[in-house]
Image (cartoon, rainbow, N blue to C red; front, side, top):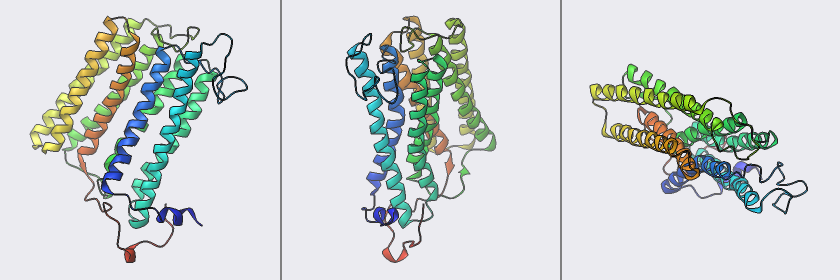
Amino acid sequence: MPLRSLIARLPYPSTAVQRAVGIAAVVAQGGIGVTGSVVRVTGSGLGCPTWPQCVPGSLVPVQHPGIHAVNQWIEFSNRMLTGAVIVVAALAVLTAWRILIDHPSRKRLLALAWTMPGGVVLQAVLGGITVLAKLEWWTVAIHFLASTPLIWLAVLLLRAFREGDEPARPIVPPLGRKLLVLLTVLMWAVLIAGTTVTGAGPHGGDIHTHRLDVAIEKLAQIHSGLLIVYLVVLAVFGLQLLRVGAPKSVWQRYAWVWAVALAQGVLGTVQYALGVPEAMVSFHVLGSALVIVVTATLWTGTRDRGPVVSLDPAPPADRELTPAG
């Protein structure tokens, strides 16, 4: 039986299910980065020194000379969490595909859903390269940065469940849209700069890992300076919202960006002043994910794609009988 026919037999996902799947995608893509930071700050990055096996000859942790059992299990648990991300990615595709069967116009929704398992494959490959490269700082940076567009895409997927598929119509003036593009570029610049600070910092995932040989003070100044520029652009964007009388929903998203960005800045400052304690590193990584989420939410909230047509199943007589997706 064709896969499409099997999916067509599934119950049509309710509005609550669609929302839950979208939220789960955002949490999964953001959460895996946070758990990865726990591996790094506990020095467990090479708790499983090979990939895909944990140690040579075993997929699971076993007693191994020179490797503490706790470090093994921390790294192994992080790898196993990838399984949860895979499940969420599969649910996203199944949900979007089931919707597409009843509403053939929802091809964009399915395309966004497919980026979730695609991201899992990409991260698995990069994770293997990172382990095989003995956690060189730049491989860790690439591994983290690759997760950031996946968080962004997960937010777009969540939004897509609740919007139509018409061409995006901006609800802010052209200058406001350009400022939002600049804000997004600056966000990634802040993230990239943050990975260099991490690369020069004390938490490399393993005591033998090479660190970026640049003064951490200089890198931290660049990182914080970019955040300040991000906030300045955010403020100017707010003036544009005032000029056009933006709707309440946009102002709410805008306020969340300010709240999260400022909290992240304060957290980073305190973290640096205290000598980069381990727990605060993971909270800072969580903050990075939240900055992406709220910025992407602002992005989606400043455009209109028309009404959503797929909250309910289509009448049986109206369903597309030709293969889709």
